[in-house]
Image (tube, rainbow, N blue to C red; front, top):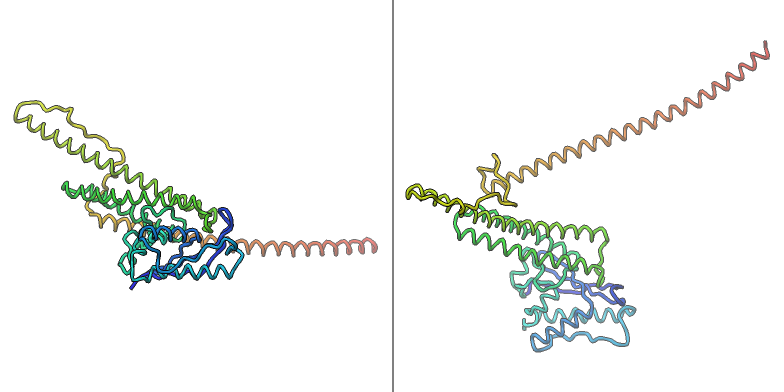
Length: 363
């Protein structure tokens, strides 16, 4: 029994690029999440052609025919009929006893499924079941874009951990294993960055639109990820250079020791040690005796302390706001009192003038 459910509950009208066209919202339901993939009729026609070429026979359900005399843009009845037909077309492939169509790369690429997905497999329960697959093209779906970016950040973290293990490894086998793990992560990161960047360039097509501010924010995320990837690659290269320099230095020391017993002078030109640009920061008193888990806990402690400091600042800002509001209310009250005083002064002044006139008449 498949762990994936497919439906096309809604459609929308896209006005760019080119002529207006109908976009079909394919809803994918998995045990842990749901996501929507938007496709137009031409995408379904291309999928049908690729599936037929790969498998050698047409899928179980027929693809709704293309109409040359009417369009779905201004025809709600035709839009609903085609939506229902396309939904039955996808369900026919998904529920068929013959898995050749849904196990093909064309099917996985069309729905943005991972390369190792198959109906009823545990791949649908993986942390990133709808992640980017190599050759899947740009990622334009907004929700899938964010999910892929989270997967990218996880890969960067894994690459950083592999490099840390490589730096602390004592045997050549451990160094090679950690280096290979970091390389695999960085290669995947490069593919994801390309897919995310190309996806942003395609924003606005096929009805997938984002606000300008959100597009700029996502471009900043891609730029930051690319810089982090480049920094990790430089760090990997610098670690390799540092390891080679340490080995060369050890060989020179061994040669100097040998010269003490043989009476020969070891050549100093064999020493190639020196400062390595991009090397890790030196140990501190608090981190020198900690392992990886201890350093991670210390980092969490620092972050918690910073969070508490920020909360304290927020409370202070809130109190300052309350004081400012109270001062404003007091100023308003004082202004009203001054206005009342001005009116009283005017009244007294008028009464004084009247009394003065009366006194002048009497005198």
